[in-house]
Image 1 (cartoon, rainbow, N blue to C red):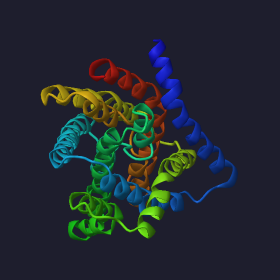
Image 2 (image 1 turned 30 degrees about the vertical axis):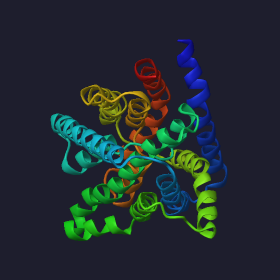
Image 3 (image 1 turned 180 degrees about the vertical axis):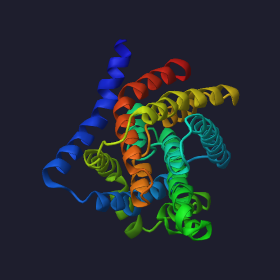
Image 4 (image 1 turned 90 degrees about the vertical axis):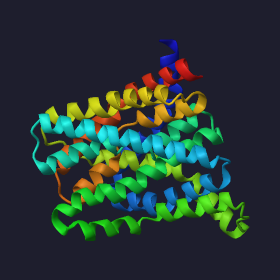
Length: 308
């Protein structure tokens, strides 16, 4: 019990303090949340991914293994969420929003600072989280948008959204620099590092501001099922995969923590953008983020107990 309280105080509380500041600023000054979101997507996250992938020593086979793990994990969650949505007899549009709330988890402005605090800035642990972040960002702004936009604009046009995201190009650039051991000129490396270092603070501030403007109007029945699948079933599935693949140590802990994070705010953002049950998506994000203070604390503890 004492260790759970320590984890909650030293790891989760700092995250929620910065989120609360963002929440208060949004309520007081009505910040332009869309601009903040774009600042993350087009500015700090690509720089963060480029810097981390290009400067962290990570074996190619580890990179592929982590990608495979997350890809399989998301696929299993998709199947589970699809089955539950079918049992709940949700109509197609609501089923898409429900499924997205489970397969898209907050690997950026929540998981990155948690990883940083849990592993005290360990570059290897962070590199695993960066791979997860890269996968989720590309996935949410490709399949996520495709799943919603294709209902109204067609599949081909929706697919082109994938190529508009700078995260993909930051990932490719970072991997090339790392693999070929290219020396990045100082006039590029210095500003890239400055931007990357701002990522955690800006991301958490944005998350707090986004939560502050969520409006709660839909029923909670579907929300509860989403929370159970995302916050409890998700990390349990990941834990089973970790044992099945014989993963251990920091890698196992980092993957378990990454899998336990709440629903990504961007799932609500794209639901709002394409007008597909945005109230449901907003409620899931809000309650998922609040409940994660306790569930993530628990799975951090489980990770330390099993793999430290």
